[in-house]
Image 1 (cartoon, rainbow, N blue to C red):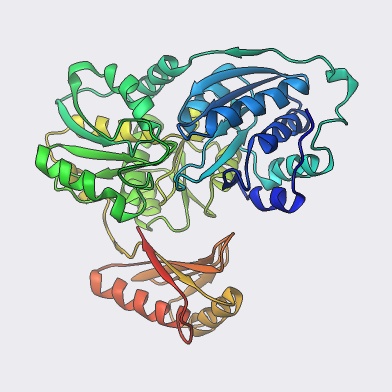
Image 2 (cartoon, one colour; image 1 turned 90 degrees about the vertical axis):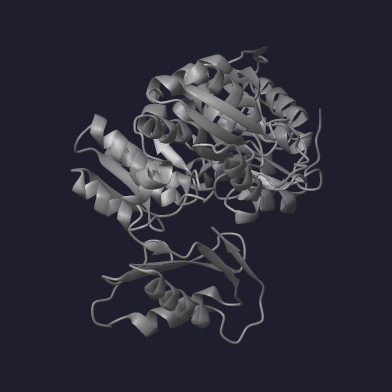
Length: 470
């Protein structure tokens, strides 16, 4: 089969961490087939495991990828419908590189590919994705594959869902008082994985499902729980059901957001601190990773519990690389990604949910009280502003703060300015002319003052669009 690919299109869809774009204009089966061939050659795979989400284009693209990979000489294990963390489980459990077809939280018209080496090791632009892209560009038909891999690989099917559920519950068993839990799958892949996981909990949990029907058109709301608008249905249902907590997953279910018994969204930083405390109780003195927009409460609490906090840039490749370097037991991001050493350093929204449920079941307190100890600061949420020249704006903000009494500045990821009573980070988007602001303070007034002052600098003299996310 000879496929024709637009080079400009190929370059545009290979992002920092994955392949993603509009279907079929930017990503299609031809691109998937060429990527499968290139992936096998770059990672030297003898066997590849492939999963896909519920988007209408995903099965065809996964099949095309398998054709390309097998043509390059690799055997392919198709696990079928899967969450991204289920694909990571398969990669770790079976010991093979993997490919997941999903566009995560993006709207219905998108699709893409997340790739990993064996044991769920990430593949980003700096760790193989650029080589895969360049090979797709230079040899889209696979004519240059070496003769040593001339034999066509076998394509087989293997269901790992039950093994995945058992593994997660072995890492975070839930026992104690019975919980009533509302789960909003957003018509995404949690509608596939949650029934398998919760069935193993038996009478320990009463499950109230919302939008479990797999539907890549997302008829109820976008499967993007970082946007507060997409949590409204869950918040109402938790209150109506008098539930102990609510869980919301993104489209590929690798991220989890939590709503407490009052129907209020829980800060992912608070969950990071809670899970860190649980992991440190198992392994005192261990290292915990947190990215730089996570609340400063996280490193404070980790130190108080005898652990070692390590701060990283935003992005799963940085988190996973730092976990590997330090042997960290756990890592958390304010975006709702949670990484576990015992889950091959991969992120799992379902495992984070189980840790939250296990912590709550072990106490007679409501979730809001359980988490209160971890909520030391007031945070702004992420505020995005479109600007014409992000570098110039960052330089102007730094000039306004550098050298001030009690203020420190660093450039780990964008610009971070810290004071004893407040801090903020402003960093540019990798793909859009946006600056993203996250601010926090010891109280509402302090946070609001810092947030508004920095936003004034970012948005001065420009009419660009604005967007707020949590």
